[in-house]
Amino acid sequence: MKRTVVALFLAVAFAAPAFSQMDAPVKGSGAGWGPMPGMGGMDRMGTMMGMCLTNADKIGLSDEQVAKLTPIHREMQKKQAQFKADLKVAEIELMEIMEVKDFDLEKANAAVKKIADIKTTHHLEMLKSMKEARTILTDAQFQKMKKLMPMKAQKKPARKMKRP
Image (cartoon, rainbow, N blue to C red; front, side, top):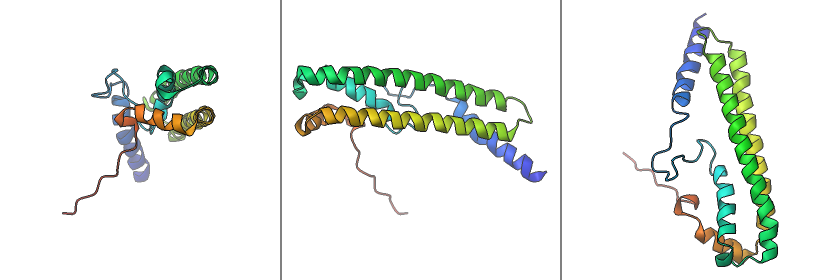
């Protein structure tokens, strides 16, 4: 009995803060909404592709390359929109399960796994699209594109930990 109460308490305690801030914009993100938590930059892939197309002249893309990249970018935008919708629905379903005082832990567990599966599937789809897009670019074009990316999107050096 004690284990059940502790497990229930921990599940609610750790899930509640995540859901309480789910719709809040990320501070300092510029557009109002920041990257989705836990996305690890995957939500910027479509933005990077759009930036590449917007700056086609600076990067040196040919008309043929632009014609190949445009449908990939549109497909990525569609997948991103569908991902956000599917994820939001799954999160709402989890909240519904957890609304009752004595919620079913197995149902909550299944809902959390569904959320993880949605994220994983989306990440893999975005990686495939990026791989396909990058094969269209030359090495020089890819390097130019990387330089155009905002500093946040580029790899940051690891911070050194201070010892007390």
